Image (cartoon, rainbow, N blue to C red; front, side, top):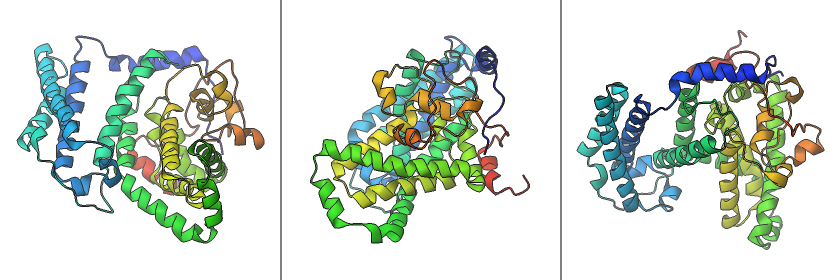
Length: 384
């Protein structure tokens, strides 16, 4: 497999990014700030109202237990009126009126449907539903937290928030979050059907007898061992690489870049990750800590962050470490497969971590289609 393209000097890479992104910069008075805020909050508000109207079919059962629906209605109210306010600003500025109009329309529809006054009642449990509430909350939190961090501690300072192909990766983000319930069902069915014979009650009881602080690192190490070999297989098996190449087609790294995954690989990754968790049978508290850690790390390692990690960079996978995995620099080809810890890369000879610099270019040698549908069909195209 080769996922690389010829190296280019860093100054050329930065110049190319500057040219590609100059029209996406957020400057006061150009309408971009007000337009995108109005549009995004208007659409999110509309989706949130749908969650309140059809909670059984659109919200995630487990997640509903973690938030207060009435409290979130206050945030919904702020979102609707903020969208309308910034919509007005776009028209006063005479710029980005289309974005402002979209925000106005969706916010107005939200109010017509009941807005932040939709009654909150009991919700019938459903084994299968779209995780629309999870999508909304995850997107808002990610945008607020990681956009702030990437602007305060950026590795590539010239990279704009709306860098090239951000729309494509946003689509992947939404698609994967909406399918969370389906992915869990598939993963649970897989591990129970295929690995039920391997489950050992004595092993599970032994792990559960340990304190939570001891269970969590054991889960991380065992999960990372399985994920390492799954990841490596996707690189080294030509047919599987075609699925994984979709993820490596990202050429601009930020918190959103990690969302670009082919649905086949997403299903495999989720299912494989559940195997050690199912066999070990940790306490729910330990499992929740691991899931939170894994989810945050998956976003952070793709981010445009240059936060100094100190000694931690030798113990856990960091942005610099995983950026080398996405690198188009020749020495980094097929390295850094580990998801959580560098441990298994060191043990199996795939460790690559130049401390003095970062990669200069990202992406695949062979250009992939630049649309969601094109990338969905790419692995099945036998003409190439």
